[in-house]
Length: 364
Image (cartoon, helix red, strand yellow):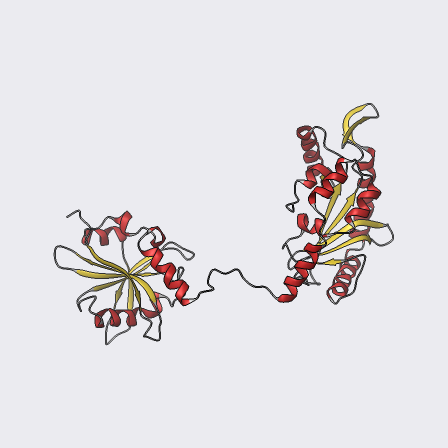
């Protein structure tokens, strides 16, 4: 009593059968002469049919190769992954259908004098078996762990976008020189992917625009289409980097600079138009989306690597508003002010300084 009664523990391949099943087999015996085979499903480590669908063939092959005697009990074991763990006694019969009876792991371990924690530890913790599984998986499919190869058009489009990307240090240098709104507009129009990098979701499914018209209320500096099912339309208004975000004016300390107020009023004008004619606006942005996906250039459009958006034109669109402007002087104080503003703003909007926005760029 107290010692492990696992007399064999190996990876078994029933590849000669139509089921083509790999599984982990542990053969146990106790002091009373009871014998069992625990068949652990390893299809999450190596491409294989499940133990459940192959258990009859596995039992037959184990008998044929002399691994187990006729009287051996058969247990089916699934480790704790994806669908959860399970442990069942398998009742095999030549005259009736196979049956599965759920078993208590602790009682099983008592019967076969096993340490429950050690016996039911995951296979990926076994330093003897895992190298074998890795070799078997590689032999089965030498490209198993190779990265997915996307469509050549996606790859070419990705390369083209990356070739024209602005470097992060170029943007930093421009901002550190306190660039004006006009200077930043000119620079950012040359690479709209900077906005996709921050706001697109999914990453490579987007269309970016500059100077995008909104009805009769003017143009938005930059707009991003993205999203799944319902399309996200992100309206981005920028101001220069030639002023601090917070200033003292009108007898008040630490209020937003006047240029931020101008941006807020511009956002409000567009908000009133969009929500006052939401159906017209939804149809218009989807018409523009289809034009760009079909190869037309609209408002300096940049189409993401995937080439189209998986969105439903009949569903409501989601409008997001972003203002980027000014420089950070007191990060902690400004963060609080921006947070308070965003919690109270109608319509909902996100406010960034150029310093905080740059931190969101992952490019070099």
